[in-house]
Length: 607
Image (spheres, rainbow, N blue to C red):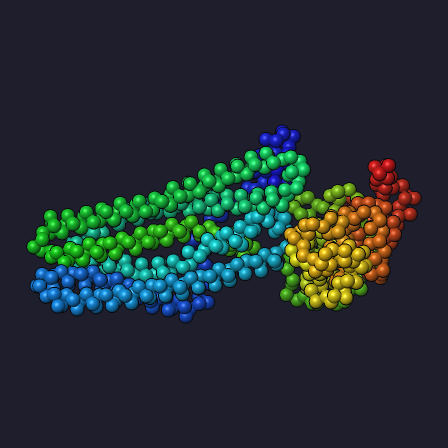
């Protein structure tokens, strides 16, 4: 929940809520060069386009370097001599060269925009595809909003970095080197005077970038925290309004926004300092150039055309420096986004197929736990030395107190988590020796979370078997007694559902989720509190449908209402990390042990 209450009252709840969004704010130092190398590698898939852009940039750099020489020649050779015909010809040449430059710059912008968009699509697709392969442990530790921030916001922030890396970094670096070379060839003393402020610039930029990168890392994480809170807050709006917690959530939101704003202002403070340092050094170089040219060397030793050309060249030197500083500022602003993207891409799933796995044959239904031990966190066992054998076609009910490990057992059968000790076998095969896909394809899993996707009812049921025919969809709906209420809807099976099945009752959503599971005709069925939202009358009908549809198939049922599992072949009472009692309902009631106490306590609650 977005707001967590504590014994300390509302204020304590707000503190807990805010702290819950800080679990991934540890700043990992990653080499920016390494991150950039990985990022720019995506551009290599578009070599032809990049090569075309580089050719365009080469032409643009050459024209830019020639322009000051044209100005120098115009002043010293044509204006001074009164040769206006020659000046006219020189102007036409300059006009043609620069006209072509303008056209090519537009072409360059179009090509790079196209390339960058393709690269962002590639990265986003890779990230989304990779996230789909990650195990439950990854999602257990990260709010959905923070994952969304990486897929959308962080990737969008890379567009300008990718584009400017080609259109700014390479040509401006070449321009700087060429300008320095030309200036020293023409007049070494003037060149040294014009570039006297470079050491000061280097020291200032180095200091600023160290602080700025750290500030932008913090800002990205504060943005992620805010995004995660808003996503969870909106998802749980019914709970918030039910408990009249609007004021508390607003306070939490205000605190997160303030942190976000402060981190942004801290980052911008350093980022804006880049331009100030460059401007100061640029001005200092100009002053030094003109003082040296006029007062030290004298106008007799330096022509007016040369001074004007040097003035242009010093602008051509410092403008790329300014561009590069802006690019670097942009880089350290957004490089943390790339770091966060690659962090997820480098996160491997702990649940993976071994190299020598085989495809799981058609499951018969025997399930064995052999000395199974499991814990979500090291040192805290949820299951300890669990052993049991399930015969094909048996219906096994798992009961016990909350947190005893019932859901954990069925999650392990589907290999959503890997055990630390022991072996789990299906039909005598270690589930680690078969591919995960071939294992899960033969299982039907129905949980308390009756999540429905935006789309039609038909599409939601068919999600359990993507190639299901209309006949199979209708048969599954009838089996769980969802067909009647579906046909009463305005568009029947083509009724469009909003996010999470808005507009349907909780029981109706549960029935649709049940039909989705049934249509896959699973070999092993897992029902985790699957009938908790269905009224008793409907539940009896659903049970009849399940018995008819899955006769002879192994099933595991976790049920809160013990009255619904009386027909189970065996009941396992789970507690203290293992099975404390086992038998059918009649046998366990006669023992008057743990199951008897659970049953009678529940019966008293009903009464």
